[in-house]
Length: 294
Image 1 (cartoon, one colour):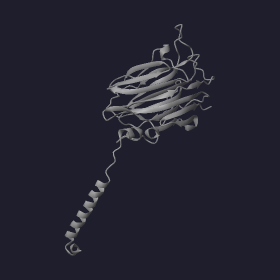
Image 2 (cartoon, helix red, strand yellow; image 1 turned 90 degrees about the vertical axis):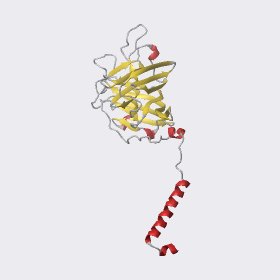
Image 3 (tube, one colour; image 1 turned 120 degrees about the vertical axis):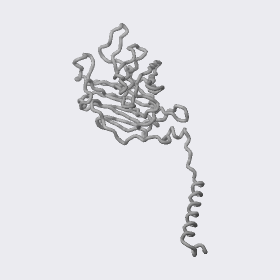
Image 4 (cartoon, helix red, strand yellow; image 1 turned 45 degrees about the vertical axis):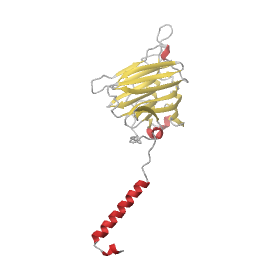
């Protein structure tokens, strides 16, 4: 107790030494826990950016989108059961008889360095066995689309060749992925039902050191309606089942697949939730039915 009778400086020095000692002891007693890479893959990586709670819709289609945060992702993939499109027969396309103003697509994509990509499957016409092109759409066929880039790269849309090896049908299960494999190059793979399509797609905005977001999308697309309010239709796209969805990321000098669970994406149902019936499936899966507005 003698020290309390000395000068205030002695007391201050004693208290500072005491609290410093306690702080060091507490720090030593409670080390920061180390989370394994396996656990980070399942939950959240160190420094992983969380997705925004909401995002605005772009008009023109009925679509369910799950989009990641803008982070150092390298792509996206998943396994999906292809859906069935039921047309609104009153909405025949006057410029392309045999087709309709509503269509189905299910695809991946992203935005990197302000360049957007849509890469996946769309319900398409086919080339018949006799070499003729069908009037109506008969199968899902791979497609790739990119917007232009400030490098001068032009916008482009292309399909896989119109051959039977690249046709898939409602109810078939496919594995689909896009991954940045080197600067300006995306590897696109679709495989399932005994068929496989692989393509290196050039996109100048996509590089491993550039932060990007990635998405999965199920849609009722509407012909010549981009940027406009959705058109009333009885068309529906039902039976789509994402069995799993994952994001590619570099961690510990390897590329890993991280499940795209609900904490890793922004939930978008456009133009409104009333047009969708959704149910979760497993860690990162989802069942999706889309209905028009009539």
